[in-house]
Amino acid sequence: MSLDLQIEVTGLTKRFPLSREQRKEQGTAKRHVVAVDGLSFNVTQGEVFGLLGPNGAGKTTTLRLLSTLIAPDSGEAIIHGHSITADPKGVRGCIGFLTSELRLEEIFSPSYLFDFFAGLHHVDPEWASERKRLLFAQFGIDKYSHMKLAELSTGMRQMTSLVVAIAHDPAVIIFDEPTNGLDPAGIEEIRTLLMDLANKGITVMVSSHLLDEIDKMATILGILSSGKMIFQGTREQLFEHSVPDLIIKTSRPGDARRLVDGATITPEGIIVSGLDKEQTAAMVKILAAADIPIHEVRRVQQSLEDVFMDLTGRGGLV
Image 1: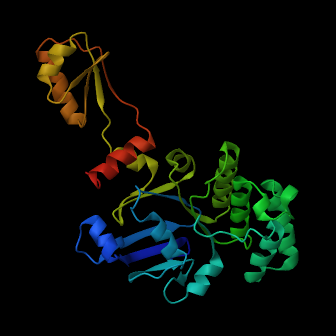
Image 2 (image 1 turned 180 degrees about the vertical axis):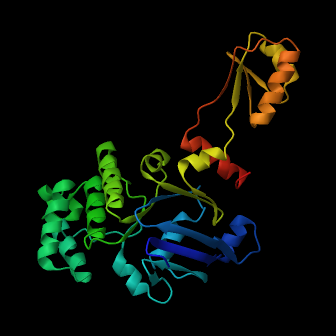
Image 3 (image 1 turned 60 degrees about the horizontal axis):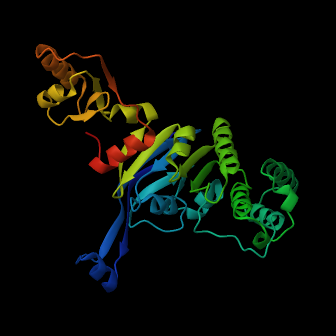
């Protein structure tokens, strides 16, 4: 494992048994469901790796495997030099993990919980005290540091969970839906924190259903579908795999539609899906040969959500 490779996943597989009732509900004779299926990918130091996928794609299971909450049926992952199968304790010592499935005891205060988890990681008390002061001030927890979690808002409890997860200054951060329960200001705080940590060399892996937030912070995107990684790369590389709809502005949309298969009429002219550059050029030639006036040809601007839906709907790259 190279020095800058912080997460190395190879052939990771996890199956869960299906009860008789579940098999009946799903109309299947299969006794297991494959949540993660031969998953392989890498994350290098200082990256913000945004893990995306539709419901049931295997995102949460993947993060639970990497954090050693559950064991794989086969495959391996090396986190900051530690094996999730041979050295799970070493993995837990070098990661900060946050998930909505893990809830802090609400009878305790943020201050107590921070000290407790810092102690679990054998953090120097003086260093931990200063880190707590800085993080509590940054996220507004200092005003509520000695109140019970049960007395705090949902957003403040989530902030506390996040700060406690990084009490020991981990080399790798794995967060599942870290912005749950937060208002827009809180979401921005989390985004800024994760990007700042990455700039300092911390490796961040984050999953969220808020695609716009992932789009704003992630340097690398990974898209899961049916337990498999169907894409890993930059935002620019992802958009290269999607073919946006084409709008042809013309004063004779009816005639244009008859000449172009699959075209539909819009107020501006016609719109066509799935045409690459060569196909677009050929279509323009056909319209020009028929003396159809063409005032403009342009692509519909796409968001990350548009490309995500297109990619997961197709089940992979074309």
